[in-house]
Length: 239
Ligand SMILES: Nc1ncnc2c1ncn2[C@@H]1O[C@H](COP(=O)(O)OP(=O)(O)OP(=O)(O)O)[C@@H](O)[C@H]1O
Image 1: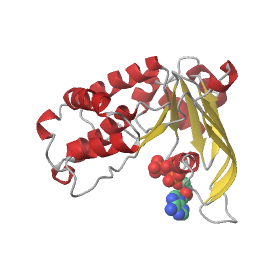
Image 2 (image 1 turned 180 degrees about the vertical axis):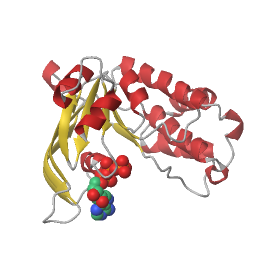
Image 3 (image 1 turned 45 degrees about the vertical axis):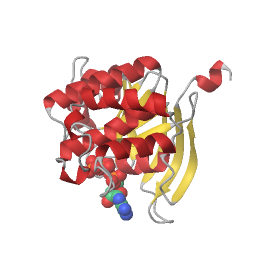
Image 4 (image 1 turned 180 degrees about the horizontal axis):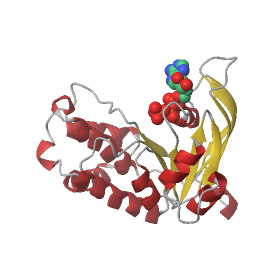
């Protein structure tokens, strides 16, 4: 594979996508995520962030455009805001199932899964059922599954709301390790001070279209804001 093919782990050129055939919910969404890049997907409630994520994952019915997942394995992990789990499987069984679906060998699986459980402080709950977990613990399960797969790109929907400060910090350091490995991350969030601190670039959506895109400096220019404006100030100016 040439360098060009490796240049992006995600490229989306969505002319339009909608829930009904005649009505586009999002328009002209062009975005790219490079290896090692963390892109923040930002916008007010109802702007079209989840619709963009669903389109990228091939879950929208009416789409004109193209989405390409790149990277070495062309593998992606999606971490939904609302945890999804099986009632009759324990935490450990969830991890084992994910590993078998993605062809991770037993030798690779066990040590990595144990390490992730430790990092997310869930070792003691290994054989418990996620149904008995708190929302934050269920969210950790989703994150552990994603990290277990070592995908080329992570698509993460609002990870900060359910996690406590320690879990957030643990999650961010694991994510940094993945970025260093060359994975890309597209993260939708409303927690703008954290996004400003950790994201290298941003895609700001309002009413279904991109209103600013690029580095924080570029977003400030698009928003007509001062050189020292925060992401939050740019958001307010643009929306
Ligand atoms: N299943 C659906 N069927 C029809 N319309 C929908 C559906 N889901 C979302 N919409 C509409 O699409 C538009 C964009 O919604 P979307 O969920 O993408 O927003 P969002 O930016 O993710 O918002 P939030 O920050 O509140 O999560 C909204 O007008 C919403 O009403």
